[in-house]
Image (cartoon, rainbow, N blue to C red; front, side, top):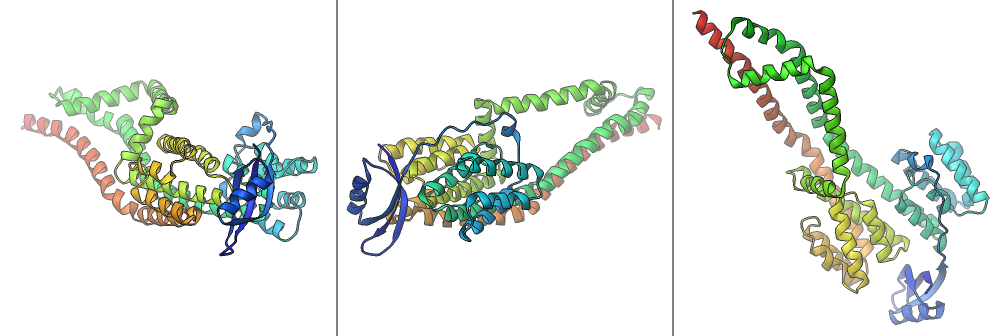
Length: 406
């Protein structure tokens, strides 16, 4: 049966409603909405989108998130001002300073001039425009609400950019400290310690196990520099390959979620993204099942993907989304299922999800603001432990040598 995107108005309260429904024909669709207390005001049949051919190199072209955010916002303003889509795209392609993005927008403009839709032109660049982006634009085109959908999409991208910036900023300080420690440790083992340990070898002093370990490690790194770099590279590449396998992803993602402090941030970030993206899709008129399917492919953590895949199957069988989410309390806190349940009861799921997203985004902001004060003492203990280990390993044999001299 055909699928329709519709808009309707409540016969009693005058409240507007939009969405997607599968019906035999428009008359059947109007009857279904009338049974719910709504009068059909406009409808459009959703045609199956033709498969877009994506060139191999176009799969790897990337554009900063801020560029796409500005593009969506400016395109919405231009369309609301009365410009046709092709002219708006042409104007934006001339305004952008990013050469890659300018080329992409020029190609999209040419596709539109050739008779293709905006969503088809954007879908040719999956590395730049995600499935979420192209799906929302497609819904906006077929429903005639492209301006509104682009506004929602721009807000979604702004929130996602803010969220990523906060998390990235919070993790920058500990990352720099750890990298600096590794570099300093490597320099000490290969250039400084050999001069000190040479004294112990010349005097023939009996060395404790800690000192022997440091000396052997230093000798190995100094005498096998190329091999050490190869081993390090193999470990890094091997770790990435292992983490990219299905079983490896499950282990890594579970460990990350279970980590102290970091795990809490990951859960809140995923819940915020789920609520924000799903709310945006519902506002745009995407159906529940299609919306969950798009969100499941947008989230990176496999456990969230599994939970949403189960939710899609359950919703298709008539179950409530809130009951499925509640069964995954380890990844979706109980607040998420309770809020969704309220939305299902009131018919305002997209509204309560938007508020839920704002709540978790606020939580992430607060945690990341205090993260440096939480991580700093842990890093100090780690650095102190490393320095103490090397100090004891070097001072113990020195003390023994001095005792023998006396």
